[in-house]
Length: 86
Image 1 (cartoon, rainbow, N blue to C red):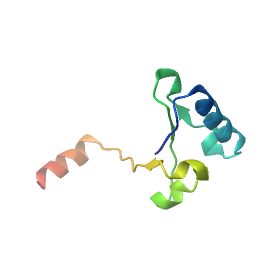
Image 2: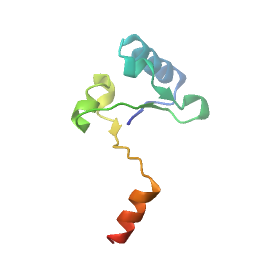
Image 3: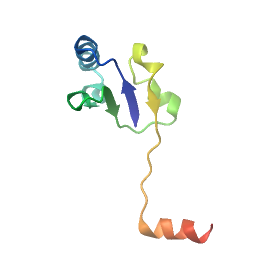
């Protein structure tokens, strides 16, 4: 998942959304935004080979402040196995 912050000013918000939507990238045009709830960030979920590869999806002007997070899913069996090894 990529978290991309932007300024809270209305103009910055709308500019960010506009840049993402006009990029043509499927990932950017389907970003989720927190602006309407006061959280001025976009979130993009994708599969990538590396964090560096994922970051290349972000428009250049926003890369410096973007944060790439590896998300994992767990099931109860996997957690129980991990607990046994600790």
